Image (cartoon, chains in turn orange, red, brown, green):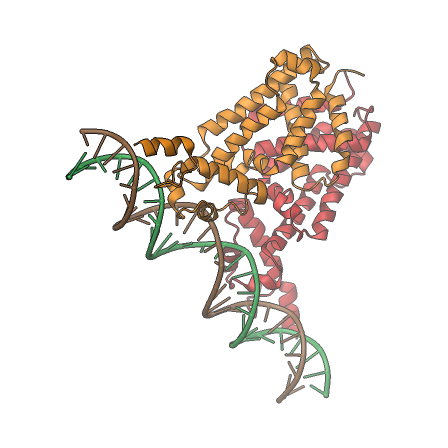
Length: 209
Length: 209
DNA sequence: TCTATTATTTTGACAGTGTCAAGATTGAAT
DNA sequence: ATTCAATCTTGACACTGTCAAAATAATAGA
């Protein structure tokens, strides 16, 4: 009884069944994903890496896709945190944090966390019926945050005001998403020209000149 | 001898080995791709569908990826044909074929030929060493065509002129690619708002107003 | 025309994959 | 201490891509 409590809290003890597998699964899954990508993240490998049997996972995630959804969800959380640094009100944020920062944060997150990004916007996941409700919500929350940033940019900063915030956000998101995909997928290999492209994006969506 | 010639030209005869497998492979491959997507396009299924053994394919394509590259290449050809209808000079094209047509052609191609589009911009293919030179060329030809369209749109039409053609093309391509991906992957389910988004894209990249 | 060469296709096999069904083990609750 | 539910394991199935070696057919040279 006391042992059980100790083990649960200290968590470094070798345990009976496994302790908290679900969590370890997510951690190790994310780690493998970072290093080897979605390929190489197999249920069996993941299981043996954690010293557990091939099918043990299926008591915590009904599917492989279910697991991937959970990891993608974590990705959206990190993404939102990266694009909008917290500790600021949203108006404070974009007063001294210009849209250029948002652009570069978006792009650097995408390229630095390519495997997360892949999962977050994986067509296979989004089109499958299995798509977790919580993933959907995390994604929409991210987009909502982005729209708010655009709104503030329009009213406080120099975002162009001839377009509805929602629409501007949709187009800008599309642009950033498209560029991210082209970079991640190795179609624009020219990482050096990203800066000048970013500048042009800022110019196009800005109101000056 | 004469039989051989006949069979080669008439091509509808049931043949010795198989006749022209490589071609049949591409056709059937593209067909399966259209109906079932990249998933469901397995070498084995493809082989048995053509009444041939599992490994017969490997004498015409060294890899599965090699086959996919070939199909993707065909995709780029169709894509270019769709975005720039031939039978017009490039200046003629964009005099009466406005950029709005190009936008809607791009998006409709992407959504109507989602599986082709997936392959054409597949990160797995582009990042793999196997990436065919001819695919690379087909892709760059497509992009080059797009840049030319933008150039003409700037000089003859009402494309905004405060940005270098290449840069404008890069950003516009990113936008269209990103929107296509969001649509195809089922993240923007809202197909009905595509029209208004397209209008906004046109407005943003246009010079009027 | 017969034979040697080359191009094509097949059979067998291997190491993987996701996941289902049934049984075994363990922790906690009564 | 016995029951119950959660957790984990073993075995199996149907797939996948692809290699090696053998078989077959088409072509070229004599």
